[in-house]
Image (cartoon, rainbow, N blue to C red; front, top):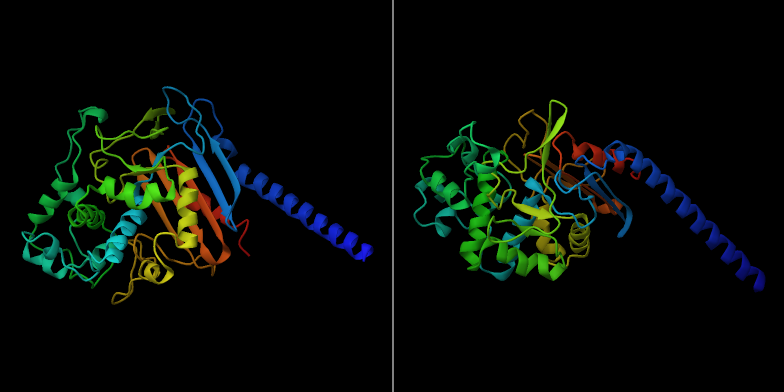
Length: 368
């Protein structure tokens, strides 16, 4: 009996040592991908790998802003840009859960004064990018290039709504094609407010961020709330870093206005993995690729699979839910491989990186 006990203990110790060695090898390999970003005076990135529900790797590189030169850390909040859409979609799904909204409700049900073309656009169309709405970025007034970036007027959500109300038709028949639409997600943010009776930032705080303990996450509204431990966006011009934190479209919320940190996104990842906000059945519509005649395609012709706030294209045969974000001075990516229990999150406050590709390089170290 004693012999068996010692043998079992030895085998367990050997397994632990091998696991720790493998983890150290992974950490070294991941760090080598981002080592060039280490700096005391340049913007950088925050990187998190979650495997089997545990943090496998977490490290930050560079500074959060060029004025204080404060080091980036796990609690540093970055602008998520289009990675915000997964939270907007979740807010809508929570209202469906509450019975206050239905996926087949029409735009004209929410906005009775919306033009007739809105009668053909459903909440589902907005969520999965099949609405055909005109791009508000193409319709809004363009800023005077001589105006300093911190003084450029920023379009607000209600202004986007008014611009879309001035249009006479969609780009295509709703549901007949797939085309990524920031306009649709701005409207979804407004719909959350109209249906819930709370502002979009308030609803997110009450129903998502506060319940999950995401204390460094918010939908930013200038003058109304403050971003804790904020990272500022930057662009390199003629070999010199310049702060490029805001643009004319930085004030819209549902399509890209959320800030978050590695530590908070780890909690979000756990909530998705454990179905803390919605049941597995309720999450299914978000994780079912939209079907359109001829198939959904990106502008470059590549196939696109999209649910509600998530791209769903598999990677090397591995099921995946993912998104990326790009805005002035920021690049972000979340790559989740649910069946492999692997998540890679990269947040950058510089515009010269492609975190969605870097995240896949990291994922390749684990996927078999």
